[in-house]
Length: 195
Image (tube, rainbow, N blue to C red):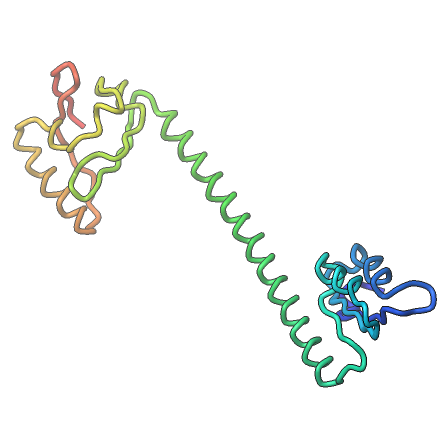
């Protein structure tokens, strides 16, 4: 019999060969998604309560039991199992997406940090202060990464071409995508570089 064929398994605590708790415990591995319930007429129901607490049974009903109560408990149990399956599915999906994001970030990091002499990447905040600069800035402009994390205008020469840089940066900060542009920037040595 397939696991999905058994949605609910109800056992009486008092049976001829084994107890209901023993039967339900024996089925946990084979049918992990089956809702298990115990019916008991015992005045001492501690074993049944222990089974519920240990996850071997979803619920127990004391005899005599009301069919409407049984129907309600089964409905609640099936809904609970469905919600648990949906939760586990979402958790797995999030783990997969998280792994993909981490892999993508690692590839990007290796790409950016692997640049040495031709390019550097940067980010700056809305005020124009650099928040990230790729390590290749040291090879290209001579600045250690930590030293470069100031306002972008600190590096601009007073060349007229840089007036366009300020304008394009302002438009970019307003959300308007800008085409590539040229600028003049100081190397740490004081030399001027055209980028």
